[in-house]
Length: 270
Image (cartoon, rainbow, N blue to C red; front, side, top):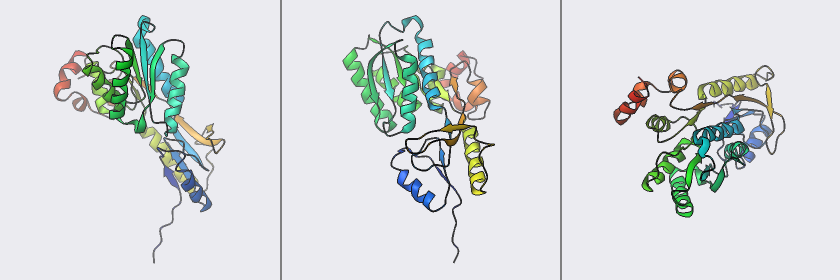
């Protein structure tokens, strides 16, 4: 009989608490665990992601830049991610560190399961509560929710207000090209994946992570986890060529297909 031995696990836990028991079982079985993208709870051996508070700060700074002198002319809506996602709490913290005192937050939501339809419903509620003439911008924690938010804004006849995002999804980049979405956060996932693989190989071979992981991160259950935090970039229409196209994430033809061609031509994306 052939048995398959697991040397190391890489986990990307949307619910950081729910996975803690499984992480402990792996650890008890002598299997090292790498937390990828999200900091799972339990006895994690290594972690790689992006500096999530910096992601939130990057979004908040971009929103303030877009608002300019209009920052205090009205109110913004904050559409955070799911309350069960550890990354969402860090994005939220980073954004608040930049926005608090600089803008008036009219409504704020933790969006169940990050779903665009839930963000859409939340945005409709915010528009009803605040009035469509009082909203000057929207902090959206990711591109998927930004899509739902923008649909609600359009339905209410609200245009030309900045909406943030994250993940540089193709649809998000296309909305940036057309001006419907102001920005996204580009996170170089290939680099993050390479680091996770490098960590996994080192752990499987029983090697130290000192030469790979220069940072230490604490989770609610584990202290000083060897970590690599990959830098992020604020993505706007001005640097699409230097980010997602340069890194081979998308081609110009993918971004500028069909109805987006005219908008791409207008900003010189060819």
